[in-house]
Image 1 (tube, rainbow, N blue to C red):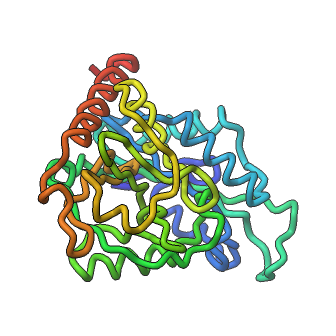
Image 2 (image 1 turned 180 degrees about the vertical axis):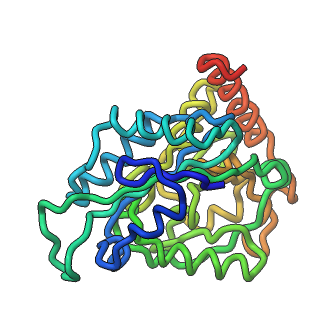
Image 3 (image 1 turned 180 degrees about the horizontal axis):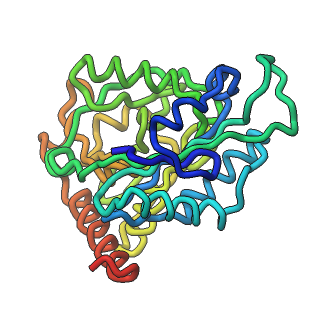
Length: 290
């Protein structure tokens, strides 16, 4: 993929883009920036509004001056999709860095932000969604502003690499014996028919799919608790699953050596997956994809 990318408002080829990256970009030197990943279904951006709201919030929290308005960015993203003639399932990646400045921990307040967007093909991971995954518990050593979707992902990267070397799909972060979230996904637990997930505070990223699933649970009249989950609750859970934009809802069938629900995908997880698929079908009708 990536025939054309969006670079500071211009649509360029990949080769043209490569010549524009500055070694003094603060994103390159400090991870000083933010990003979003938006799901494309048949070339249409799903839940675009909430994603852009979070992007602007992340920039505000880091005091990055936005280089575009919401309307300008939407127009540029639509042109990017059209230029690529992209009508498949994929991911739209947007990144904004604070800008270019001689290396200094203290950033200048009036820097011009640098941004780009690209499209990658990404079909639904049906095997994961149908059969589930294993996760492994790890100590959460990330910074205390996980609510900001920043480029500072090294703890997540190292943890996810370690988890996959152990044959697990994701790390499951625990801090102070409280279950927080996964390396690149939010975590849900079901006990006695109640859907439980960590509150949306500074210790997790308030995932767009997380919020969508909570709304679906409300529509299905599934009881919901947004509260801290003690580590020992993992081993008495009836069901567990994770959510993220590219993978929707993926069941967890094992946590380290502990098998969840006999290794089977639970009834409530399946019900939420079906509701998610139905919401996609309704959305596709609304936007003219069906």
